[in-house]
Amino acid sequence: MLRGLHTTASAMIAQQRRQEMLTDNLANANTPGFKADQGSLRTFPNMLIQATGTDHSRRFGSNHVGELATGVYMQERTPDFTQGDIQETGNVTDLALLQGNVPVNEETGQAATLLYTVESDDGTIRYTRNGNFTVDGAGFLTTSQGNYVLDSEGERINTGNEQFTVNEWGEILTGPDQQPLTQLNVAIVPDPAQLVKEGNGLLRYEGEEPPVTAVNNDDAEYQIQQGFIERSNVDAARTMTEMMATLRSFEANQRMLQSYDKSMERAVNDVGRIG
Image 1 (cartoon, rainbow, N blue to C red):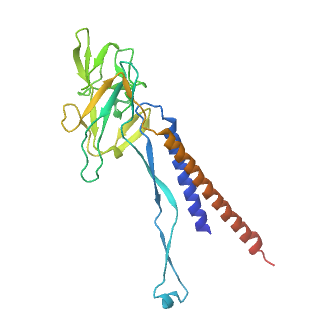
Image 2 (cartoon, helix red, strand yellow):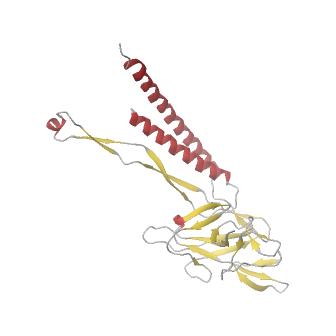
Image 3 (cartoon, rainbow, N blue to C red):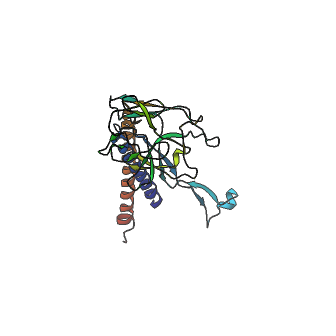
């Protein structure tokens, strides 16, 4: 009975964490460049049951009775880096990154992902797909949270104002004669599973193989669309359906837990009563 309590409790915790993940996805359905998380539920290792103190071995040739499931848990949350829809905004500082062919890991079959490179508040390198940029008071191209967007040389981009043009290769052209200023850096992250969300659309890479630039790289194809943003890849209708299914599963395990609790209460107060 105590094992049943543990199994149902672990299932409730797993469904609660899955619900939190789905809620976070739905809350960011309108966040540019947001990548929905996917959760994987795994079972704990099964427990092997053996009979002791009986003639089970003589009758069946072995003490082995069978396996007992010990519950489930939510192992991890991994972002889905599929391309989101492109929406026109008309703002010159909005830059959508359209991903084409990218390198694929031969062992895992996992495709790389392309990301903008930015400088965080503490000066470290971070990555993002949120192209909802702006120009700050000093003329630097930044994210909406003030993180500097970097060029292919790893330097901050100073456009001076919003009077600039970005071509499909990410070259920034300024002035009345549209002279090249610099080029946006687009990084190839070989293992997207090593990206960790930090909030505000920023991602931290923790892989061993460092990202390389996609600029002038024949292994990666991409296109920059000025005046457009990449929308979130969250499917709101599907997410709502999954949230309802998760809630139903949580409630079913909750009723089972209450049933175990009542059984234990009866065993203690009634069956176990002396006299």
